[in-house]
Every structure is written in structure tokens, then in C-alpha cells.
Image (cartoon, rainbow, N blue to C red; front, side, top):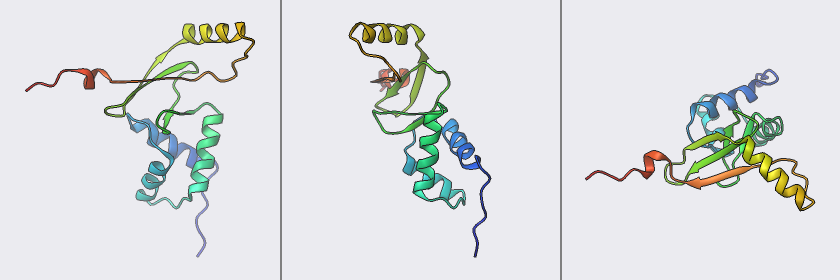
Amino acid sequence: MARARREAGALDELLVVLLEREARPLTGLMLIEMLRDQGETVTASLVFRALHKLVERGILHRLLTCRGYVPTHAPEEIYLHCTACGAVGRVTGETSFQKIAEAAERCGFRVTRPIVEVEGRCAQCSEPQSR
């Protein structure tokens, strides 16, 4: 029995849609499980190749701190990862990235892909618990 072929880019679109719906990063394995739950026939290698391509194109970002993927909303984002609930906030940091590049240049280092991730607690998780 032949499998139906997916149109080029359809898996990419599905992955981006799944990630846009989440407030937290998702790992490749989580995404595979979600796709299979939706009835998609996917292999791990196919999903990971698609994720790699989306990261290379700047559509997704792979958080190094938790190995999850999130959509990229701006080219110079600082990712704020809540270690309590897993949510990811973002702030645009043009000035910060410029300062990083300038500092690196003074050391003779050329920045090719600046990544800034900050771990902490989001506003909701930082609030004192009412008793």
C-alpha cells in the first residue's frame, strides 16, 4: 500500500503551526508525537531534517538550554526561558546584539550567529503563592 506523498513544504508548515500554538518550547520527539496523534505518517529523520532546515532559514530557533524549538519572531531576539513552567518570552535586543558584536570584535572574534538565552522565572511563576 503506497503512502500519500506530502506536498513540498507541508511538513514545514505543520511544524511551525504546532510551535506557534504552544507557549513553551517543544522537542523534536514531542513534535513527532503530536504529528502522529494528528494521523500524520512521519519518520523521526524527516521531522529532524525539516526542523534543521527551518532553523537554518531563521524561521525557528532551537533553544540550547532546553533543546526545544520555538518560532522566531524577529532576527535579534533574546529568549527568556522560565525554568518553572517552561514558557518562553522574547524581547528584541538590537542594542544588546550590537554590544556583543562590538565586544567580540575587540577580541578579534567575528560573530556569525548571536544567540542569547536567559533562564529564570516568568512573572506568573515569580508571584508569591497566596495561601
